[in-house]
Image (cartoon, rainbow, N blue to C red; front, side, top):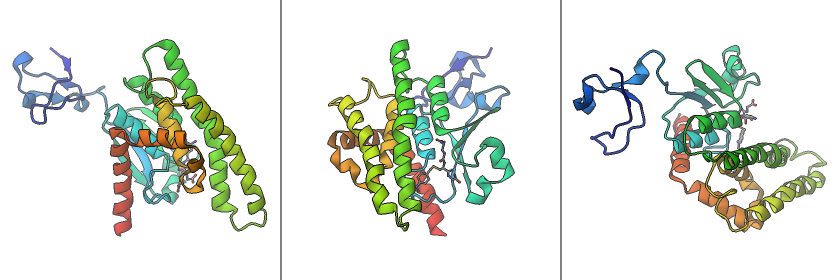
Length: 259
Ligand code: GTB
């Protein structure tokens, strides 16, 4: 008989989230349990892609960070395939990502791109990132879109200008306009958040995406004007799942810097 079970690992005392096949009935020892992932049709360890050498120098600003964080929140183990800039633009990677970027996500026959779609997929498949209640879930999804569609674009525009237009004659004239576009969003976001911990009661994928989007402002100095948002980011960064994800991406950068 095939039974699905999520037993505690007696070695670590921690809950084991991988599904197992019991091969010797209810008295089977932990060591008698065979990982279902070895069986046809079994859940697979997903693989994501990340920069082989991230230009953010391990600050967790590239978009694999939000996917790693979501995977850690739901305690889904994952593999990482590191790609160079030239590999990203090659045919093999473009088959996964039409725009030749990271992150991607592969799980069995499913291949996904777009960090928001990947986080949403994980939130749908696992408990912990979206509320069970239908209306609360819809509101959390609205915050996911707000993070990526309303708040992130002016932040990316400001960062891109700093990176690519800094030496142009128009940059100093343009910068205040770009910064004010960011401030418009932050003013409203900060008002809505108020003194709450999270955007809509419990922590959700909406907060996860919003925190990763806001973190990109670190170098701008603008966040200093928004103590509530700074505290909100700090709450996100204090989550154990965030810290595991951060350490994992930092370890990649540290190893790459060693050669
Ligand atoms: N909308 C897509 C998503 O959300 O997944 C955007 C994906 C994307 O922009 N990926 C970037 C990429 O692959 C990496 S994250 N760029 C390579 C290319 O387009 O050729 C963006 C990023 C890069 C670097 C920093 N940094 O150095 O601080 C921060 C963020």
